[in-house]
Amino acid sequence: MIRVNSGAIVPRRFSLILLPLLLAPLSGLAQAEGSTPAKPAEDAPRKPEVQPPTQSEGPRLELEGLEDPAKTGTAPAPNAETPDQAAQETFTERLQPTTTLAQRAAAILDRTTLGGYAEHDFLWPEQGTATFRNHRYVLFVYSHISERISTATEIEFEFAGSPLKRDGVTGAGEVLLEFSVVDLKLTEWATFRAGVILVPVGGYNLRHDAPAQELPDRPIAYTTVVPTTWFESGAGFLGGFDLGRDWRLNYEVYAINGLDARIQDGQGFRAARGSHLEDNNNDKAITGRVSVSPFLGLEAGLSGYTGAYDLEGRRVNMVNADLFWRLGSLDLTGEVVRAFIDPGYVQGFPEGSTANTRDRVPTGMFGFYAQANYRFRIEPFFQLLPDEWHDGHFTASLRYEEQDTDMDFITAGDVSRLTLGLNFRPLPPYVLKTSFFWQKSGGDGVKPHLWTGDFWSQGHWEFLASVAYLF
Image (tube, rainbow, N blue to C red; front, side, top):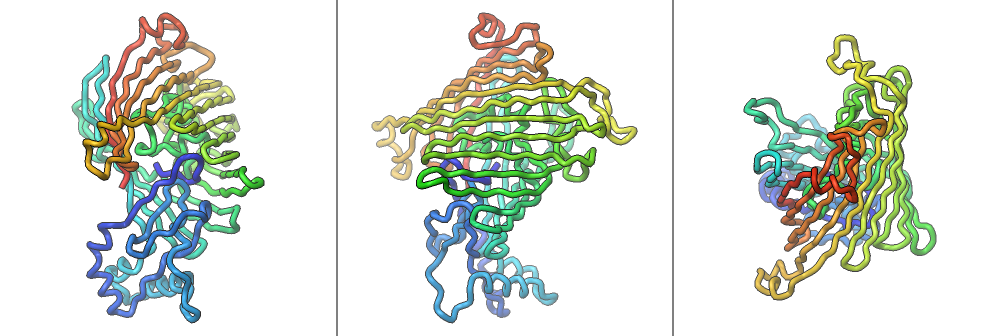
């Protein structure tokens, strides 16, 4: 997934490389017809200090905050049209009934960026079968509509999309529109956003894209209690402003459809993520996050969620705290989440729906993770590598985490895990990862913790390796 607000994480950029080459003849056709491609619009909602790319590089994108590569180009001549005027003229030409599809495509090449990321795994569990997994392939499109309006979309293919063969049976796979927004910049500190939004509960859901992560597996509580990738249809505001010379405050707040009643032990809120077609009640959930950064490399965030999950007005309330701190070659990061749920049942869907199971809804959930990442180099090794890899590095990671998806009982939904990882990153957009974790659940009726003896005697291991890349 692509980050929407920049924090302590270093931004990443996409370049549109192949598409202009493929459509160059179309661009010439459009110019022959009198269509003038617009210059990239100037719209930098979050990071005005980003250095501009040269004209030869083509359009570029700051992934962490949808920042404009803008502030682009040289100052216009006194009588030259502004980028906004050129953009509006181009849109007018594209909407003419006589304009061909080829001309419309050529006219947007200088303001639209295509990119993405992918992840391919090898899984070797103690209990199960070793397998390769084409885990995800994600396409990302970003485009300026005008000086103050931009749009971004992410389309994810899980396990190669459809068809998907599972347990010997071929069925439908997943192709998800996980993120699709249109932003209207109102002021330097406020942008209105609408569409399919990443729910800002915690930092991990906002920055979960695989090439940015040091371990190949996501924290367990942040796939269930916070069901990453958690995306909902809604609208709201985001932005940020300086607090004095060094401090920076960023915020996001939205009204969304929100969670429904399919809240279950083990899965947490994963099956309860809202529909993009309908809501199961008239209550709109409210969610938001505020983060403070006193200096580059340190960010602390506090976020929350509240909304009804059924027709009776029973609610889910959630609070999350997250921290990222960079100390030279060492990164410390972690999050903790607590959910409070009104007692109820999995019900309230239209009559005849198989979703109405009448199963009991858990009344509380909890989870956390704490992780340390240490970057290092082995100089003789890097001297043997190609020149473009000489600035690469290794990262060793250690993470401990727990989840409890029903705090009233000790069940298999109580899980603790210790993970060791080592990865090699020859270039920032490409990483080879390996990890080994030891895990214990509460399926035997004993609460699992790292410091208890049965964690080691009754647990099991799993090895996971992956390659992730950004393009």
